[in-house]
Length: 265
Image (cartoon, rainbow, N blue to C red):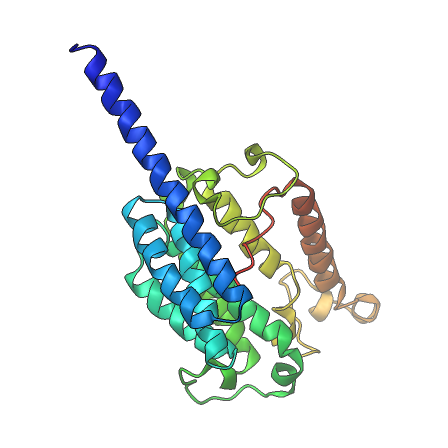
């Protein structure tokens, strides 16, 4: 009897855990049904117990997915304004458990980036000002927005040692599946780093600089004789860097199993 009891207890605990997961599957179905009926407030109400249950069970991927879904729905109610969603996500990050904060930071960086992509023409028409920018990111100039996205990705990757010990499979409930195994990007650090790489290699940062901006390297022929100076192509170095960034992006794409986040709208 003494030998059987621990096994029975383990079986009971496993079955109990599976029953909790099954109950949340039903809750997720109710959320989807509410959204399908055009009832976002009802869907939000259904998401609250999912969030609390997932956090309690340390189901970090499911919790992150539910939080993001809730924020998107709340933003939709407020007119589907990006600023509503980003402001709410920033508030969630402040109180989020440390296990999910890096992914929320990554989502926030992506939301800022997507906002730029949808409003590119507005940003390209704005001039950089010397005034201290306010909290309303819809009024920022492009260099300011790019700097904030950069800051978010750096923040997401700050706990590198912990992220490298966290299997990407922990967030299966959140991340989309690709065609290749997890061994290509086995840890959460790998996933976030490649999300950041897509931003840094996209060329968006180049748009934040003046069209004719370039840097002079110490070995450039700017102070050489007239013959070398006349033969010099100042833009060659920039083109080489762009080619390297493009090559890095193309190299990263085939190995991606986790190609992004679940759609939360």
